[in-house]
Length: 140
Image 1 (cartoon, rainbow, N blue to C red):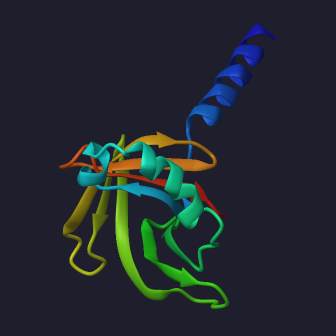
Image 2: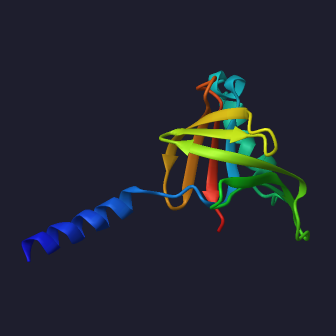
């Protein structure tokens, strides 16, 4: 009885800790090194909500990670079923390092570090530049 309880508890805690990157993710926030170093003035803080706070975005940058180690990245517009300029890639997640590879040659084209991965959010930064960050929200 005791062994069964411990085994069940171990399985449950293991499944909670292992989050999957698979699915469709929408870019919600992106900062370059320049933006990360720049401080907003008081005037900019006041004007930013008035300039863009009421407009709805008509495009969304999506990245799709499939189960088979392949994925797609592109921009989707309102009213369109398929994304424009969808780029296919292979990916490999090793610990916290996510490698994007060319689909045909298998050469690594980009490496990022996964800072946070939950059921609903993904935060990454470029492996070469800690200051370039991107935040994604899970769509599917």
